[in-house]
Length: 466
Ligand SMILES: [Zn+2]
Image (cartoon, rainbow, N blue to C red; front, side, top):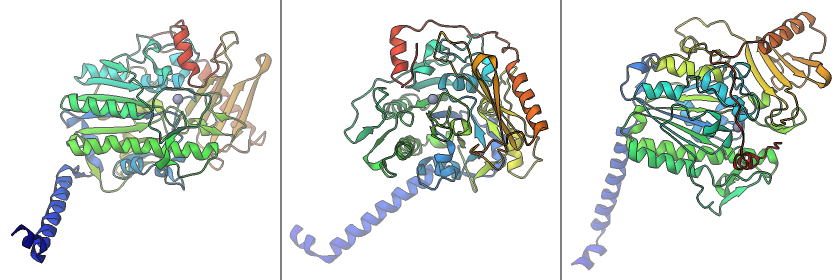
């Protein structure tokens, strides 16, 4: 009988129908997990949602103009693009520095580098500073961090407010993964973070949580065979590694979709700085503040879908990031912050409010941050309206200023020289008063003594320190 059945056509017809049914059911399940569609006004009502989780994905060294979500011609970031497609994207966003520690201290505290005082290799964030993780922990969130960049290690004050602040153990690197930056040697890959994040979600996904993931593979130029799509130059490999990290982000998002957590989770993607490819004579980062090293993404995906991507065209910067998120969540603000909530700009982007006046933005680096015996040499960029001024200490107490018509010269390729003396004078005044500001209310940044193990970890990132 069994033989006859196998040979009969109706048997195959039944199998086909069953397969189609199974497929249809799997689609229905996906549909059940899909986030509800909502109008942009729902962003203003996020604070009313109970048990809203937050996943903050920091992709180290990610310049926004290399993401397809920001108009790049190569499809480097389909997964991140998808977050922006039914979420919120800040189109003209900047970080506060091109060096991780300085930039992240400003992002978390919402204070400019000159006020955090975290500008040299020994500086740490004061324990008096009120950090977003502390505010979230006090509001009942389980706070958990996974990181791989030693510059955001706990000794520099970054673990404040995190119940767990963990650097996952490096697992064996799969043979398909390549490393193209010979100077660096951070063990493992970002897969270690994604795997640990999945484990965390499995164990704690039903508690209200804030999960911070600091990914490092773009910094390290790590990618795998499937992401080797764009060529072999240094700059091509950077794109390959974005594609690889983008896929890892997709793995996490898929996990959230499958477990039903996506409908209860806010996902934020941001970066600490960009990367240079010779635009101003240098490769890498952490040495100056030209736009290629401080133009970074900021994308927010909501527990609901927007029918259209919402794009804030007004300028924004990393010091605004946490004031905005804390405001949207209905939590305490950071006292004395330089950054501010961009709720008005978000409302303006929906067409429901007037735009607000654009404020000045600052990026800052101490050019000698890693050289103990060399005095601080500030370099500051001020972006104001159509202009950008890059102002730096040069030899023997002198300072040099380069003015750009940023509006039409986003890559700062042609300084406008002395043709606009009034603008130049005003912008130099802005840079000088930035540098003369008082420290934050918690005072100067404490200095820590770096031990040999720490120095080794930091050198593994490719920095020279003495
Ligand atoms: Zn970094």
